[in-house]
Amino acid sequence: MKKIRYILNGRTNPNDKVSDYRLICGAYARDFELGNAIKIEVTNLDLEKWSCDSYSTANNHTLIKDLNPKCMVVLNGKWHEDKALTKKWLNGELLPHEFCDYFEDERHYKLDLENHTWIK
Image (spheres, rainbow, N blue to C red):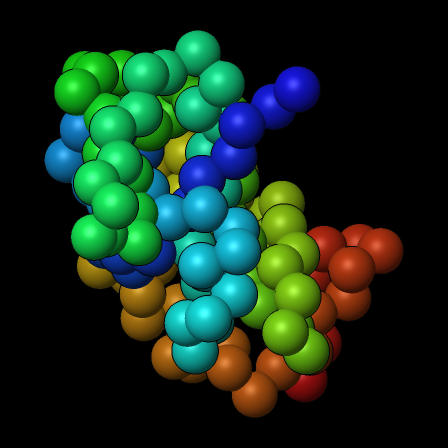
């Protein structure tokens, strides 16, 4: 079974190490008023979680891009993958700070889930 975590830092770079970020499970990620996140598979990583924290960490230097990352958006309280944005982000066409800004500009758009594109 896949073990999934979310990175809620909008300035994440695919070449960053997973150990640089707090890893949030889906149950806690839903509590945040967010427009975006990076979803990663952490099945093969040893995670460390303290009972007083709502996140895990990994003492692993695996790069984010090697953890099957997906750029996710929240619509009506549910996470949806934006495949076009994921491709752009992984190819370096979107700078880390632009990932955050992208959603500031696109917030009033609607995501066409079938074609994975934004509609005005």
